[in-house]
Structure formats: C-alpha cells, structure tokens
Amino acid sequence: RGYTPHGGSFNHVAAPLVQALYMGVETMLATRTDVLLFESVFIANRFHERIGDTQALVRIVQNGISAAEFSPVAASSDAADFLYVGELRSAKGIDTLIDSIALLTRRLGRPFRLILVGSGPDQKQLQARAKARGIAEQVSFPGAMPARRAFALGRILVVPSRAESLPYIVLEAAGAQIPMVATDVGGIGEIFGPHRNRLIACDNSQLLSDAMQRSIEIEPAELKRQAAELAAYVASRFTIDNMVDCVIAGYRDALGRQDAPAASPGRLAALPR
Image (cartoon, rainbow, N blue to C red; front, side, top):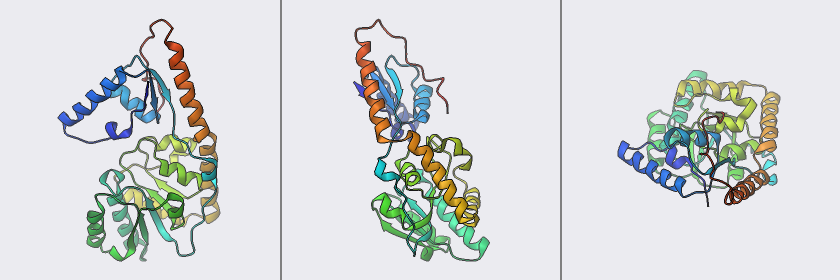
C-alpha cells in the first residue's frame, strides 16, 4: 500500500482540536502504509515534525510535467502587466498582490493591470479589496481556464502564496518560460533549486511590490535568460517520466521488504530543506 500525504493536512491552519484530528488520521494512515510517497521534501519534513518516524518506506516523488509543457508561451499583444493563476483563497496571498499593485501604481505614477485567473471562495472579498485600494478598474477576474491559455494573458506571473507543497502552477510556468515573482514557501524553493535566491518572503506587500518593480525594470533579454535557466533546471528534475520511475521504484522496494526482516523506522529528519 502506498500513500501520499499532501499539503492540505500539513499546511491547513485550524483550531488545535481540528489540527489534532488531522494529524491523528495521518498517523493512522502511516501505520497502514508500506511506502510513503511525498510530493516534496518540505511536506516530508513537516510530516516528520508532526508525526515522527514511520515503519513505512519513505520516498520523495516530486511532481512533474510533460514534454509538451516545456514549450514556451508568449505573452499576447494586449497582455496585462501582471498575472495570477490559481485558486482565489487566503492561503494564496492574493490580498498582498492586490496591495502591491496599489503600491506600485502610487509609487510609479501609472496604473498597472493585474489579471487574476481562477475561482474560489474569496473572489468577492478580493474584488472589494481592489475597490477599497482604488484599483478596481485595473484588476480583472476572467474565471478559470487552462494554465497555458492563461499564461498568454500577462507578462509577469506572480505567485504570492502563504502556503504550498509543490505547486503545479509554478512547474507549468517554469516549463513555459514565463517570468515569475514568487514567495519562498513550501516546496517552491525545491522547484527553483539553484535559483532560490530569486524568491521572496511571503505576506509582505512592500517586499512583493519591490520584487514586482524589479521584474518590470529588468532588461527583457535578462528576464528571458532567467526564465530559460529555470526551465532547464525544471526539465532536469520535474518530469512525468521521473515521477513514474520513482513511484514504480517505491512500490518495488516496498514489495521487496515483505520477505525481509523487520525494518527500522523510516527516517525523515536528515532530508534537506
């Protein structure tokens, strides 16, 4: 039996009793699992912090994208300055993005357009926030659509998340060579790898607006070079082929243990962050 603990349990902010219930379920599942397949080192470490050691095998199987998703997507001629793609909910930090657009507008004296692609429970609150910040006409909500179609709608993708595991939207944008401003939360740093220094802290609209300003002031050729560098790194690690190979290897190793002597607990503490 294989099981993949996800960010939904380990990133969710809940009352202590509710959180204890989640962790109790995770503990029960771990005791009935032969191999734990974590989608990110971040969630594996968080599992260790909250659940502890496990008798199951432990494997990191990072998300991956297909070869077709490594084809660049160009911005349309009428693309907005900035783009967000994902769920419209608090954990994604979109409120800080709206505040950052307002800051940039005041600081640089011109209106910046933002497109928020997606759906979710916080759409009305976000629309009200844009209105309160005086930028309602600069922010549009076209609804949900396929990621690669959405990528053409903006020149810079902003990922202002407060919590993530290993988000597909960052992988897809990297593969499509979309310039990004992103926060260093969850497994996003794993995706950026040697380019992690480009990421910023979350939940800080001033810091985010500064990073967004740098992204529009940088030379286009340099921005393109940085996007190509990240795409090359992602292509070397985060592919569907790698995912499949790692999952099969995990099950093969778990099957191989069935006739072996009792194993020592799986250790997660030494995993890199």
